[in-house]
Length: 95
Image (cartoon, rainbow, N blue to C red):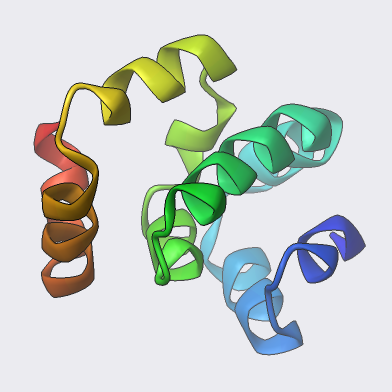
C-alpha cells in the first residue's frame, strides 16, 4: 500500500485501512492501484482537502471506472461540492 503514501496518506491512515477493510477488497485495491490512484488524484486536483477521509470511509467507490467516478462529482458546482464534502463526507453516499 506504499502507493497511497505517495499521494498523501499517512502510515496511520494505511494501517487503519488495512485493519478495517475486508482482505478481498484490500487485494482488489492493490491490484487496481492505478485506477484507485487516478480517482484519488481527481478529488485531490479538484481541491477536496479531506480526500483521505473520503477514501478511508468509501474505499470501494474508488474502484469505480475513472470516467464514471468523474461523472459523479462533475454533476455539481465545484466550490459548493468541496464545501459540502469538507463539512460532511457522508454526503458521498447520496451523490
